[in-house]
Image 1: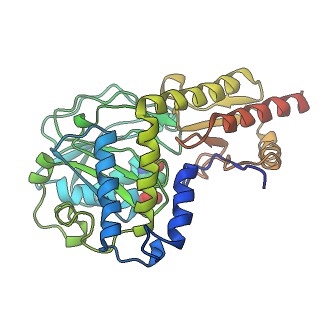
Image 2: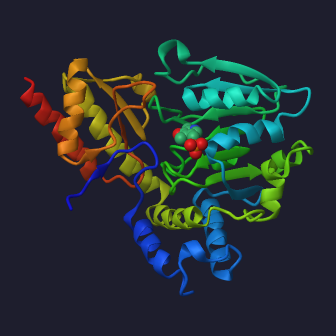
Length: 356
Ligand SMILES: *Cc1c(COP(=O)(O)O)cnc(C)c1O
């Protein structure tokens, strides 16, 4: 079969080593003679997987012992509820910035549990930039932001020095570059963008934040319970965490510094073509362009469907923009190789010649 270049926004491309290890483990997991999807999550072989995935997260992000790491279910979306349930303490409000659909959903859920202070929003320009001109109040329970806006293609490259606990949804750019993780009180990420398959969510929480958590929280939604039980309060997403562990091994083998060099080279190549090619135009202000999700449109909207068809014939898959914004979106997550981006750029150039 010809190689399919996978630009899907999520579930998304994973390293071949993680896929190969999964195929093998579906046949015979860790020498048990059993398939990965039929072993007990409490077997010593599987407990070793969760332990390694957890310690790889700490090691790659340089987290010190003041942090806890757990793998939960319910997607990043359940975190939109768990965060205010656990940390929006009575009498306080929580601060959010609205940078797109996911941030908006986080805000909507938080409002069910208490008062929400939306410090800034880029909705006025269809979320094509990251608001920067705002102050985080001193008296809020926490400040929540979204580092990469998967649907609109904007990314935060600088994080504020927050006077209150800093909580970030990093679902679509975690492990894509080095950053100071110790600056955050909580980081969470659904696995299916840059870390693994759908079915598990990585949650990193600082112990000092946990100490301030509400006490009356339903058991399955209580961070402390999941942490005390090492991601095994109930049956975890056995398969998904296994694939995450292998993806994390691959990330570690490259290192975040080199990962950033790779990701920047891919994004630079594609944005340069978008800016050069008269058929295409980027939708995001240049300084906030995401390296993970590149959003663009055709200057002549009638050429959009033909271009997508042209791409499909060349095995360039997953390029249709999110249904809420339209246009095109190329997701360039960690595991995507630069030759896939080159294939897309070549298609853009050939399409230009055809339509000259
Ligand atoms: C995809 C995504 C979500 C939603 O993740 P689910 O796992 O589907 O709940 C939340 N935030 C961001 C930034 C995302 O990219």
